[in-house]
Image (tube, rainbow, N blue to C red; front, side, top):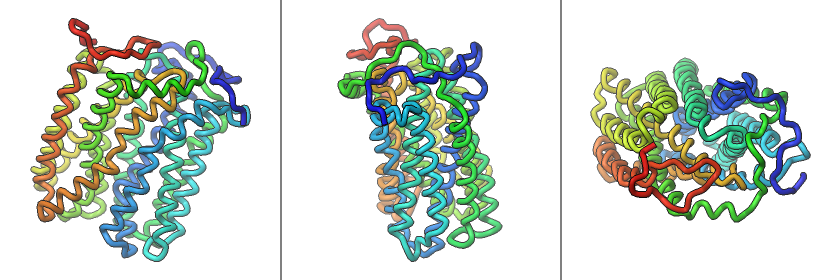
Length: 433
C-alpha cells in the first residue's frame, strides 16, 4: 500500500473522446454502466425477494425487518470507504480501480454465501453474509463515484449521471421481472430460490472482468492533495441545506420503496406480480433519470428541484389508491419516475458540492443521507402497525411529509461555481440556473 497525498494516477489510460457523456471512450462508458447496472441487480434482489427467501425458511416477520435494516446499514456508512480510496494508492494500481475490484469480489462472495446458509437454521450467519454483500457494494460504489469525479467536468455530469442511474434501474427492471417469474416457477426459499442468487453472483463477474482489464480513465484538471480539512465542507450552510433536502426526499422515497413489496403481497399479488410491479417502478426510475439529464438545463435548477418533490408526493399518494392492475402499474411507474428524477438530481448536486481534496469521501457523505430508508422503512412499518395493518393512511401521511422539502428549494437554486465550494447559500437576485 502506498500512502501519499492524492496525486495523478500513474497510468491514465486512453484519452477522452469529445461528444460522449463525460468525454470517455466507449470501453469506460460500458464499465461505468456495468458498475451501476450490477447495483440495480443487487437492489432488485434484496428489495423484492430476499425477505420472502427468509420468510419461506421460517424466519418471523419482525426478525426479517431487523436483518433487512442491518444488511442495508453499509449503504449509510459507505462514506467510511471514501478516505481509503482518496488516500491509498493500493499496491500502486490506483486509487479507485483496486477498491472497485475488491468491492465486487466481496459482494460476490457474500451473495454466494447466502445461497449456502439456511436462515431458518443459521440466522446470524445469514445476516452477516447479507451485510458482507452490501458492504462490497458500498465499497465499489464509493470508489466508482470517486473515479467519475476525478475524470469528469461539472458540465458533463447531469447527462452522464442521468444515463448511469438509468442503467442501474433498467437492470433492476429486467431482473425484477426475470427473477419474479423464475421464483414463481421454482418457489422461493432455501433449496428453491438459490439459483437466482447464483445468477446475481454471475452478473457481478461482468464489471469485475471489465475493471480488471481496463485502466483508470484520465483525470480532468490538476489533482488536489488529500486533506482531512476537506470534511469541513459538510458543515457549510449550503451543504446542510443539501443534506436536509436529501434526507427528506429519501426518507419518503426509499422507505416507501422498501415497503411496496409487502404492500403488494398484502393486496394479494403473487411473486410474479410483485416482480412486474417492481419492474414498472424501475422502468420509471430509468426514464426519470434520463429525463433529468436533459431537463435540468431547460427548466432551471429551482423548477427541477420543485418538480421532483411534487412528483414524489403525488406518486406516493397514488399508492393509496391502488385497486387492481389498471391503477397499480401506472402508480408504480409514476413513483419510479419521481425517484429516478430525484436520485439523478441529487447525485449531480452531491458531486457538485464535494471537495476535490477528498472527492470520494465527501460525495459519499452527501449521498449517505439518501440511504436513510434503513430508518425510514422501519418508521413506515410502525405507521402501518399503528393504523391496524392498513397501508393507505401511511402513504397519505408520507406524501405530505415530503412536501416539506419544497422549503429547501430556494437556497439550492444557484449552482456551486466550478472548482469552488461556497460558504453561502442562495443570494438575492441570483439567477435560477
